[in-house]
Amino acid sequence: MASPNDVEEAVKRLNSHKGVIGMLIINNDGIPIKTTLEPAETVQHAALITHFTAKAKSVIRALDKNNELTFLRIRSRNHEIMIAPDKDYILVVLQNPA
Picture 1 (cartoon, one colour):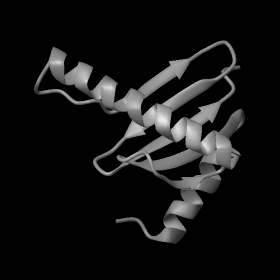
Picture 2 (picture 1 turned 90 degrees about the vertical axis):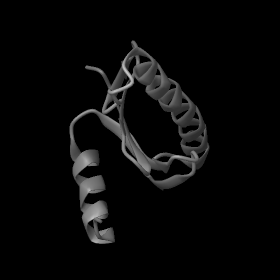
Picture 3 (picture 1 turned 120 degrees about the vertical axis):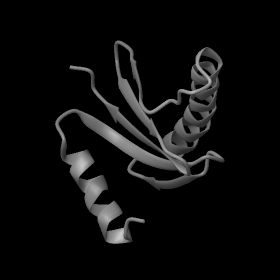
Picture 4 (picture 1 turned 180 degrees about the vertical axis):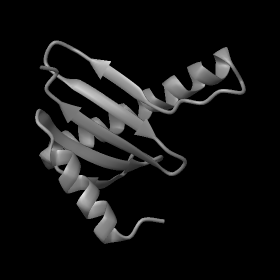
């Protein structure tokens, strides 16, 4: 398991990339563990992305029961959301698509 310092360094590295708006780490219950977003944004993104990720996982399993979701990228005109689900946590990075 990663130490708190390793997690903090990874968060800083992710946020330093050009175009990154923010990131959050949420547990599988939708509770934010670490975030760089404003509190209201954090709560909204955590709830919606947790639900969306669960649905995407079930779609992948329905299509192929031996497969699993490892990464999800959503792009709109204004934002890009990258989601990396793990066994216990979900890493989310928001960035400008340009």
